[in-house]
Image 1 (tube, rainbow, N blue to C red):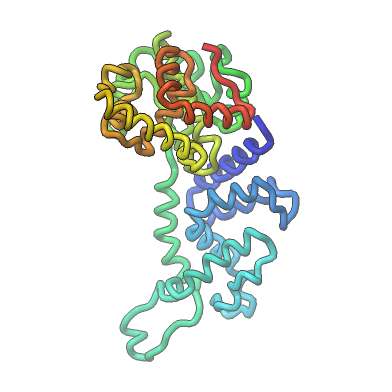
Image 2: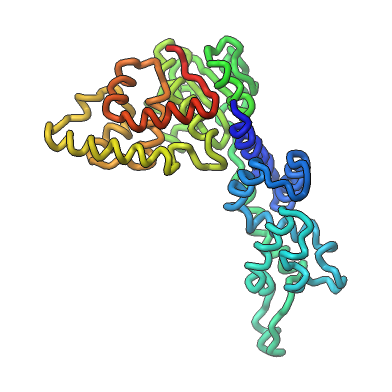
Length: 355
């Protein structure tokens, strides 16, 4: 792993701990603790901080409510029990994190100051509140806390133990995973869990939420950071494929994947242009041409458009080395995509499986 990839992983791990907090206020406090632990100085403009800002952004408004609740007494500089607009100006922030939170509060000031407005009172006095009260924050936090709880993803197999399929949080010591990949998975806290029998049977309670498990030999669940695979030798290809998804996920901060990037999609689009022309000229039946490729890729090739879901599957299929025939076929059809993936893996110091 390169230092750049480690910074991406550190930012994602920080956000995992923020996400695991039960309330928006505790989520902000967890974020503050992560920043204090990982940044050398308040003005640190490190890769870690830049990555963290990008993964915090989708949750920023709720975190800012938690910040205001946790820091209300400090922010209320005149002690009147209300937060005036001047008191939450971003210029009042002493650190990058504080300025980020204050920017969100300022942006939503007019909405927040009306959270506890009641028609009878305001119609009588014809007044408009000019500050955010604790009651306003309490009202807004009610919904923020609901969203915070909903963001927590429980493990699919919470009581798994290595080698038994029955609780653990480590990769089996006998897993044949390349050293650099093992380092990445362990740094990211991703577990490889094997189950006896068929995946569909072992995860029957999960099948309603994710029907794909009924026919899959392995799955990667990004929210709970689990790769779950069957123990059969025939499932090794599927395991490599799912590890490919985990790598694709880890190489971009937050919920994004490397396969969502402009870097990769420029290459995919270039290959798809050639494939559409070839398919039209030869009337290729992709079900016959690539019988073992992931069904998303197969169906989308037939439609002539590879959507984001198919592009993620393409990364995983081009990462795995177990099905040599399939990899060679895909490399022939997607030479620019394969080259972009190879370059990215090399740049991040990540190996492939030998077989």
